[in-house]
Length: 69
Length: 489
Image (cartoon, rainbow over all chains, first blue to last red; front, side, top):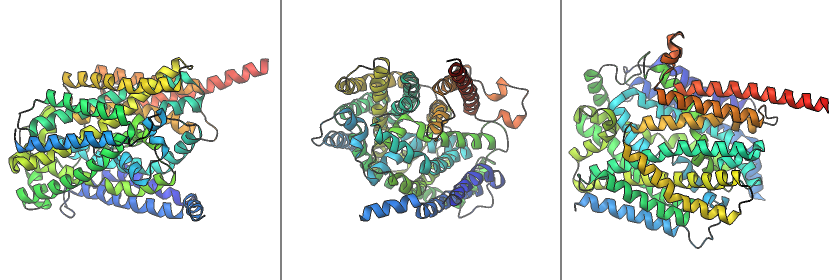
């Protein structure tokens, strides 16, 4: 878990830093300006990363056990 | 009376009834009134957590900024996403401590953590000051929506008074329960309306998203991407997104919503779904973008009107009424949550902080008695007029973000800050924001000698950095003094 949680730093790097490299309108991606498409992509990836962290987090496994009891 | 107005009135009446019924035979102790007895499950907590996303701020402000400022509006999408990541680790320890110590508000939390009622009073006072512009923003939005959607039949001033009366009534009776119940109606309605508009308007007027964005790009080159430098450019985007992400859960009402949960895993699970939920913002942006070429000419604070102006040109009055009704809920529900938070802060934290012997029941009825007073103050500022919705929110964010260092440090096993340090840091940070706001400074005007990129950083950051430096120095000093006096003894 300790190493997995660093995955959560990726959206910060991509959204705050990476935006500088995708700051243009063309090419449109699925009809969206490139910069907006980049941000939307990272919103989706953030959800995926948080789900991954959630299911590998021992804190949540403990809960599942206590629910069963 | 037109059909739009009838629909808006019915919805407002429904909100009032739901809000009043929400009490459902519960005895309204302070803990019930402010944190729903700490018994809310996943969905209600989710809606309260998400409440921030669908306020008039996003509905009108998000589309208004897309219309008036273009790419700058993307920062709203960015900061929410980052804030939810932080929530995964930030909220569970806050919730645990709050439940153990029976804490009902943010400043209560800080006062207990630092064992300093005076610090609690400071946090409460700053919190209330930051909440007022947030409430003003909701009322302002409410006024705009009703006056435009009623085709001018009801003035925005009248709408503000009626709306404020409704939430004051149900907040006094049901507290946060009223807000949670009306939230469910609000979210369903706004979801449907925004997704429909965000799909229909671009397709109807431009034939598709790609065509719409190409047309805008041709008419206003560079509008859809961030400027590489300058006011509202890339650095502004980065610093504002980060500042707002840090401040997101520092709002007294957002922090308070955490206490309503009945279990801590709720926050971790919600951290997965909330980023997806806020993609609805995209559709809000589309509405604002669609309006650029179709209802040109709105400037200054009027950019907040763009979504409604375009809707009126596009739809029959009854549908404008449906949009208006959804809009009214986006103002009423967050407005009511803010009212609960602000009144609790005044009663529980300022009053009890200054007079610790005050009894629980006295605090409970003082909190409810303060509701109409807080509402009146907000109405007063709303009618003064002025800034756009997003500008108001950014100012409030600069205030509440000043709590971030003290609260995060207090969650650590060994808190690096002392109460004197936390107090001094927050005081300096807030004073900086006030000074900067009143003098309309930017980093560029304050320090023209700094390199250009640094000058474009959101000025709230300057306050945050000063806050951390002062807090660290004062804490170190206070520790040294304690050690010195211990050695002497």
